[in-house]
Length: 275
Image 1 (cartoon, rainbow, N blue to C red):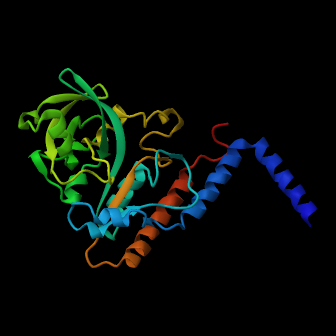
Image 2: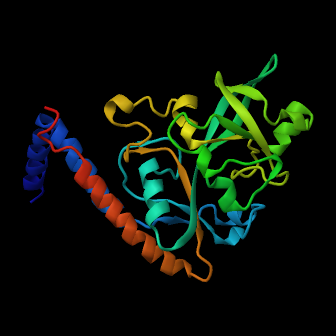
Image 3: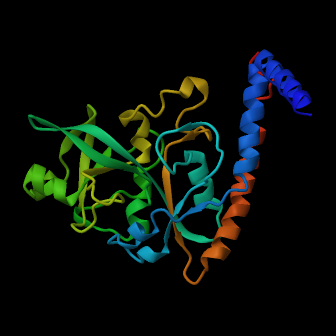
């Protein structure tokens, strides 16, 4: 029986080698099918989230899809931009959904250039968290439109104090982030330092500037750009609706999760394509 099994496996692998595109499609399809049944709430950061100085932190959850997945992954617990938008717009269990990506960048103001740590965030980031501004204003959905349309930046309170001595006149000034001109529109509230414990965010910029500030779109020629459902680069956080039990929310969002996974599977190129 073992001998027969080995012969069958050898025959299968030889066939897959002769048709690499079909093999890739088959493997990704299997991953999609398995991943569609995976849980989408992560408990990994639950304690840390509850310590955030934001509105009702106990309602926050990190969305994650453990198990076999597919595509490119830029970090841990990451999802695609299309996935974020679909969950944000179509879910029935969250009162809000935000996205963010950590980033290191060259920060230049005046004659000084620093290496700074910050976040690329969705337009509803500050609004959903209930975090205001110490100076100026925060990023809003209107800043997060078409790519390249939101060259604005919000400074972290601690960074503002260290780098600019708490000068309120920085609001409205222009700085350069990775050699791209950006306008400072505000300073975040003093107690809020971002999502990562032990690491303060120096700045926040909208997702609309992702392609200008990072190399996340380097795979665009291979259909792996920022808008690809197979390019995972965003952490997605959501706020449970008041009174909704976690089990109810998980059951509801997994229905949508399964629908998104099925749509991704249908969107994959057929083995006969591209040859």
